[in-house]
Length: 111
Length: 114
Image 1: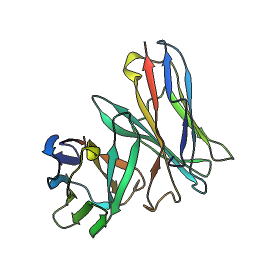
Image 2: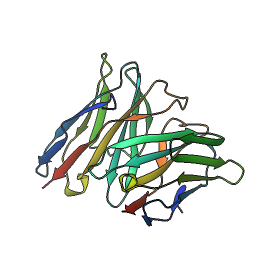
Image 3: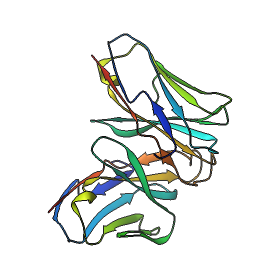
């Protein structure tokens, strides 16, 4: 079992829909990251969180430390949101400065 | 532009060859991380440097090596290349080595081994 599991693997939505991507992890973490990777490859860091909730524009990230679960929400989705969204964790203790990644969720938003 | 510069963007080379990938971290960041993204394995941590010294090692093959120079740029050397080494190689930088202060990623180097 991977240390970081994401669901769904693929997600297709219509423009304007509310989108949720889930991430579960099995290790102790110091922080959880949500990353966005567009076709063409570049990776952008969206959020880093260790508790609670963060919001940036139409993006919201939440984390429940007790349940070892995080969600990324996109409100009023738009075709430009189409990308791969990757959950990553920094493990607590030891090498807590390296990231362990989920496999990613491919989001396609149709107009 | 994220502030992390990776060169070259694309590299095509033959099996058995050696290549060097370069990364310049964001201004002020002392820590550099190398990651490999392949179709079957996804993103994997390779190695981390902080202020010129190796700090952590991940799934890095013995054929691969890296270093960080006094000006903080880093190079990842890949030798005796195999077809399976074809992947996207990302560099990321952060301000601190052992506090999660946030990462900035470069745009990656796409390596194709033929």
